[in-house]
Amino acid sequence: MSGGHKHKWSYVIRYMPDYFGKHGFTRPPELREEVKAINVGEIDERIEEFRESGAATRDGEKIIVDVAKLGYDKVLGGGRVTRPLVVKSKNFVELAVRKLKEAGGDAVSG
Image 1 (cartoon, rainbow, N blue to C red):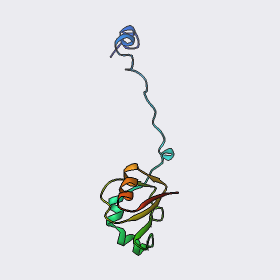
Image 2 (image 1 turned 30 degrees about the vertical axis):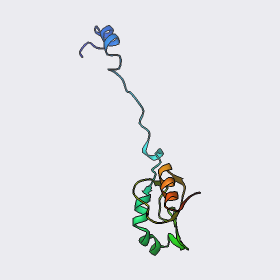
Image 3 (image 1 turned 90 degrees about the vertical axis):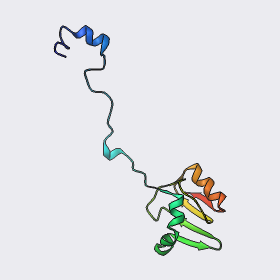
Image 4 (image 1 turned 45 degrees about the vertical axis):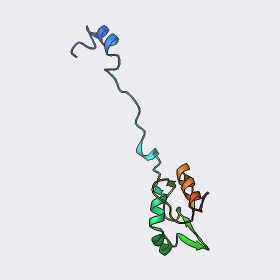
């Protein structure tokens, strides 16, 4: 590309307009918000562990799980739900809400 800023400038403008200069923007890492998420299937599998830690309690047939106590911000829809769970979280994916309700549980935002 010798001469790209001199006698070949018209060629660069016509055929390679994005060759020189910086392109795009990189957001600083300290401004990025990292979301910790957990799948409903993982909650179902690890429910005994959560009951021992105090993040889950039994209320009749249903088990109430507060994922905020576990350090999670969002509940994703991966995996299977085999028992009625009432999950409390800030955010839910639609599939997670559907799976929880199909199993006889509920999704509580807030």
